[in-house]
Length: 447
View (cartoon, one colour):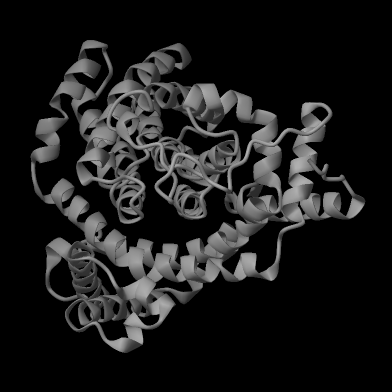
């Protein structure tokens, strides 16, 4: 076997490309008014500047997506069927067509403020459309910039160094180490899109992609700071983040070994148990040399096409996924806001917390379960509570639950990383049930 040489050129390409990607996508910076990644911070500035005009633009794109999906479903016109990109974007199943149409209708109602309070309320569609507009600006550039991390050898480097840890603990390949780290400290939505991309390219099996998406795609560290700030927990931020990380690892170890994730197939996108993109290579030298050798080998294959190929993923996110996110996110928020179902189903959790002597146990339990609709709902509901311990519990749970329907849950179902909606419900409940005792125990040690 021909040995790959570590050259100065390939080492510099690997180091500079990777560092640029980490700087743009993952590393949180302390700006004057917030903590966020470089790209997120300035894209959010643009979103704030564009305001309602951005919501109008996204509404138009969502409507266009729905109209073309309907036209293709019933008419199969040549301009869609004979164009590879158009077919990929607009040729979809009956279920997806319904999702897009419903998303488009909700977007129009909210954007132009039709008198349908249940949908236009700030508690429902009035939150989802601005969030969708923000994500449509933030996520596509993140998908593009992630190319520096995914294609410049960092996957191979980190996977070789730390893969021996993630493989036995989380039952994923060594290469998943970088996706796990990126998903944990970076934006969860970008992590899911990146994971789906790696599944499509043959790096992960369906089970590995589902594990990463449902177990590690937390909100970014900037969001964790925001939650702590809103709840008045910045003086305990170190403990707050440590609790989320520690409990998150425990939940991951347990969650991947029980249904539904344990029943997912360990098959690659080609339907086989092996992939040409995943090859266990043996190289000479210690583990550091092996990691650098594989990284240098990978970086030498990078071309402009690696970046061009991401354009389809960027368009898919805006035109295919945003209508789904708007529809399911709004539906979940309507259910949470206008029905008493949340109060009923949260009673067992409230009883558990009440027995342990947690103040406002039943209010806190409703706040915790509201996280299924959106991960900011628990924060909003807990903001008025007095006891910092309760705020700590609700804030930590809002992040550990991960699969909220206004974004991550909708993304997981629309990207098919999670195959059934009922799986999302089960995973949410599992994460809640497993996490809560540990979070409560730690909160007693801290407070």
